[in-house]
Length: 161
Image 1 (cartoon, rainbow, N blue to C red):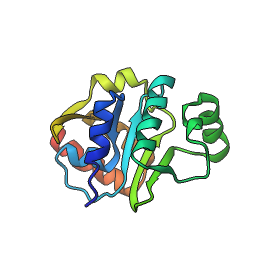
Image 2 (image 1 turned 45 degrees about the vertical axis):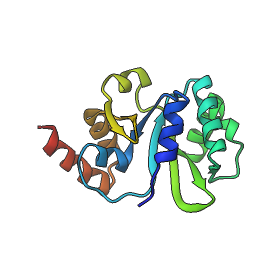
Image 3 (image 1 turned 90 degrees about the vertical axis):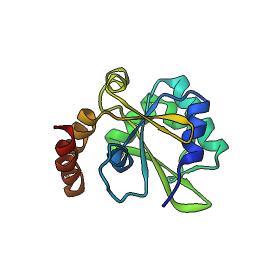
């Protein structure tokens, strides 16, 4: 099992605005699901993204694609990635452990302020980890249409009742 303790701790310490999404969020909502990568919705406000990039660089993470990390903070560059490359996430790898992947949404699925209102706060490692709220998690996973995500939706709906 990959531990993202160092990353969560650094994000907390540097007051990065983000929410855990994807399979790890499903797990943090008490649904057991195998997953290795960590999906994050980082608030795409420029200063927050620059701070996030610094945290990732300090921890040794590198972009999966040969691009400049600063481009993640550029709304026009993200728009180009979405339109020309159908990019959904910007991936970081830990060179010391290539199975450790952190995916950042290149577009907020909803305004971050709306997502943040519904967040789940999980206490772990002596810090608070902000997790996408169950309703928003279900909504985002339904939109993908992937079998794994639709199964997650079924399981999440059972605990939401």
